[in-house]
Length: 195
Image 1 (cartoon, one colour):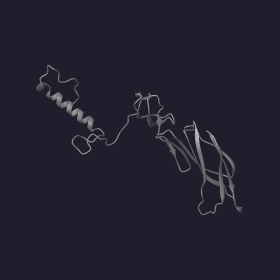
Image 2 (cartoon, rainbow, N blue to C red):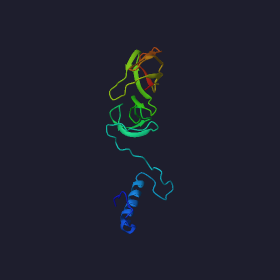
Image 3 (spheres, one colour):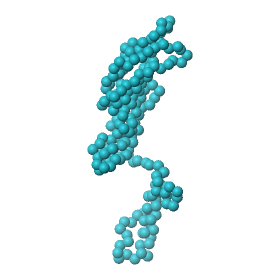
Image 4 (cartoon, rainbow, N blue to C red):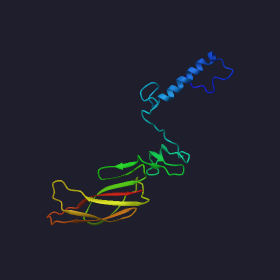
């Protein structure tokens, strides 16, 4: 039965409004039962899970003393993602957007930190430019790391050193330390943290 607002009125007789009142209680229970533990069960009133309808293009308006989670279009990648807005004036942070693979990717944390990672294979000085297609650009870069990747079945004797980094590039110098008959490229991981 549908919910009927504003009943009973002062002039209504309860016996005449009984079906409307019953309908209201049924509608309230149906509302509570959506994603919640129902009345009179252990954990009543708690969420079983939370669902978010996709917001229209507008970012939700909140008070200065509030925060909100919502599902809407991400500025990071244009996809629909879960986002957090920490205060009324704040810019929402999308924290479910990511590109994860075995050799490269990115993710954004709810704090707003952006992590990008990559696997490279080079020898000598190499400047890697971050792919920006479908990947958010850094506004600031706080630190970068470079570590060698051991090759299985090979006694790799190589050294990769981080030389410099900025918002769009990272420069690494890789050196093969041994004189192998068949030289190979140095393989290394790169991790950059910024926002």
